[in-house]
Amino acid sequence: MTLRKSLVAALAALTPFVATSAIAASVTVGFSQIGSESGWRAAETSVSKSEAQKRNITLKIADAQQKQENQIKAIRSFVAQGVDAIFLAPVVATGWDAVLNEAKDAKIPVILLDRDIETANKSLYLTAVTSDSVHEGVVAGEWLAKNVGSKPCNVVELQGTVGASVATNRKKGFDEAIAKHSNIKMIRSQTGDFTRAKGKEVTESFLKAENGGKNICALYAHNDDMAVGAIQAIKEAGLKPGKDILVVSIDAVPDIFKAFMVGEANATVELTPNMAGPAFDALIAFKEKGTVPPKWIQTDSKLYTPTDDPQKIYDSKKGLGY
Ligand code: AHR
Image 1 (spheres, rainbow, N blue to C red):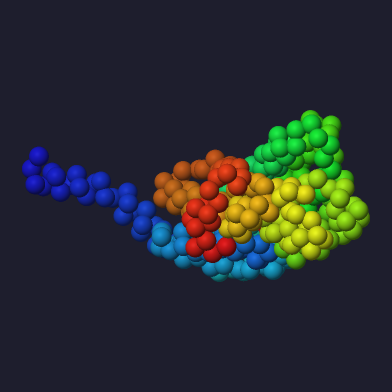
Image 2 (cartoon, rainbow, N blue to C red; image 1 turned 90 degrees about the vertical axis):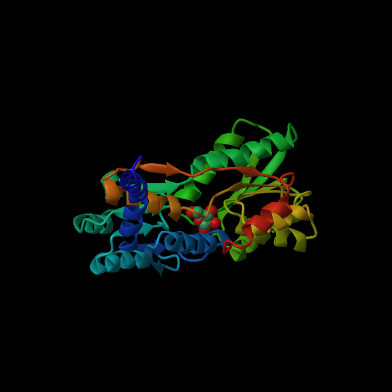
């Protein structure tokens, strides 16, 4: 190969990378984030910033403090600013059509992160990067069924935010899994709004209502933060979380691995905080080559228990902004 030919070949090999970088560098994304109700949410915000930085994308984050009305305002403001795309982590599943139509009219693609919406018009968003949250509930329920065997087991449940797709789905999946086992009964279920404080408060009321907790065999929480609050309540009631009451939850935040290390929690299903990375990649491919992503980019749901080297996992996660 001549020198000229090899230079051309080298440049051709570099071109896709340069083009992607050039496009990414001129892209501004507005992210309507729910708030900071949980360690997982804090990590998602922090990982989104670093994933944007890696790609030279400008990311503007609006914190909605758990309110849909604030998210709607933020989306309108992003549309007015003429951003190139909008990421939306929808606090609840319904009520988005009008504002997403405004984004569509302005030709601004919307990508859903970590939660779904209910709409008859799927063209209102480009793609959704989420886990299979029904499956997360199934994994948690099957873990419980396997671990209690044929013993009778009364379960209490801490649900996530009312109306959030992940709360509805995590309940559905868990209920489906335990329905196959007549020895396992759901005796109480209430929202803890995905926060530690509410998780603790609601667990205290469960314990009081159930003979100081003696009637309860297991607690299922829709996220680890509520489980950590519940663990505190169980200890204060004089019982041993992880032994007297089994604790299974979702997210795999560093604090649940700390609880694994001292035997106070039993299982968690991981939800990656990196939803933005795949969303940025789909967006750049769409802008650069017109590649339409699949409607659902699914992230993994891995089960962890105390046998999975909790110290190592804790160390690998603790720098991620949880
Ligand atoms: O939508 C994801 C859920 O929202 C996480 O499991 C929970 O911790 C968060 O607040």
